Image 1 (cartoon, one colour):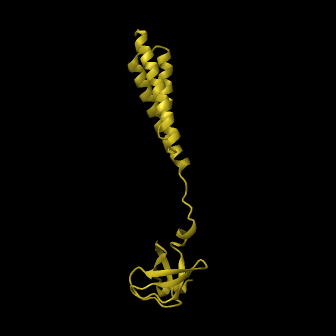
Image 2 (cartoon, helix red, strand yellow):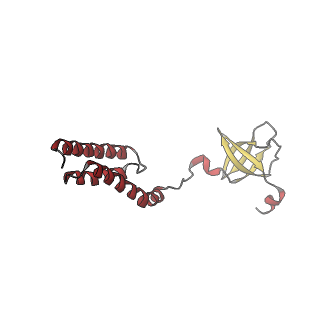
Length: 156
């Protein structure tokens, strides 16, 4: 069919592609090239049986696409990790009690999760000692808080 030179070139091409895709896969953790590695292996096998080079490329593309379509949603779901809040960011969304008055454009203090934090008001309003607030964000070493409505305070 084809000369041994073409067969040899195609064998080398698929081996090089397999090595490159394996190296890329080892350097990433997102299963980016594993399907192309398997497609290249299928093409390598067809090349070993002296298949037409265009058929080898079609096998590579076909196997790769089929594997992507069939397995990508599953692997994406399996690799999805839930972000576990640790350290300071766990207080975001929690409620706190003001321990030192928070005046507009001034730093006050709140107690949240049994820790005292410096705090500022998100909407630049005064918040008195004893009032409850919600932690909206962290900026440096300060919490950014908003005052709870009276109705929200009653339900605590």
